[in-house]
Length: 238
Ligand SMILES: C[S@@+](CC[C@H](N)C(=O)[O-])C[C@H]1O[C@@H](n2cnc3c(N)ncnc32)[C@H](O)[C@@H]1O
Ligand SMILES: O=c1cc(-c2ccc(O)cc2)oc2c(O)c(O)ccc12
Image (cartoon, rainbow, N blue to C red; front, side, top):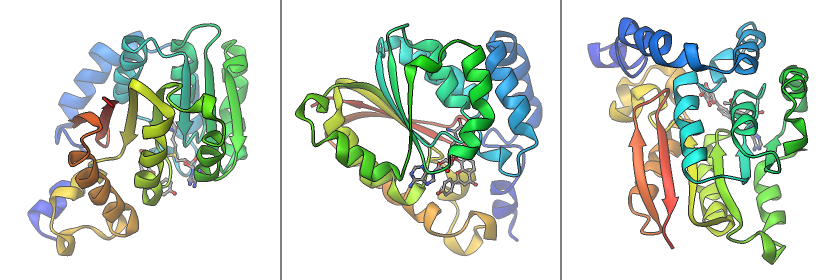
């Protein structure tokens, strides 16, 4: 494996520095992380797919975005054990509502007791389904068009572009969609032949397609942030 590929596969994350990443987490993230979120990270740590959980530094930015847009009606695509869902539920107002979609209820039920104990489960409408059909169902009701303040997309990467087309109709002008994993372990910048096996495949190509599509999309203001596994913030402008 070439040095560049080794670098991309490094466990040091995008910062390429475990010390720097640890500094950010220990100085600015963990001391301010709500206890229920710490608990969800703890119960998720032993899960075989634990690496799929939203990074707490990315979560801190997402909570900031939710507040900046005064989010009240949101969508979550890809729940897993509920870290990003809980941070959204803790951030939106008492009468806020989250349409949370995942094909897997079992992993959601790992975090649900913590969400209930935090007293925010009333804000969540969990739908066990493929996300695309739920978005299409929402669009059958005109009152849903342009009515969502915020969406977090962290599910099957092959559908990200399909989700984006629906979210451009569901989000209000000024609303924000956040896409996770848009740097795919740093391998988006590595030639295909040098990409480590576990980063190869349709998900990486889907992320490359999404990044190109968002860069060319006049409907959004864009910010591609090297945080966690890469997140792209899209603000709908028309
Ligand atoms: C990376 S995890 C989500 C992580 C979560 N945001 C968190 O904070 O821990 C991806 C999730 O997407 C779900 N998923 C995969 N394909 C899906 C689909 N087509 N529709 C809805 N959910 C899907 C998986 O079951 C998994 O729970
Ligand atoms: O390693 C992964 C894999 C996924 C993933 C792939 C395909 C799906 O249908 C759903 C999820 O998502 C990840 C993710 O969101 C993350 O933050 C880290 C790793 C992975």
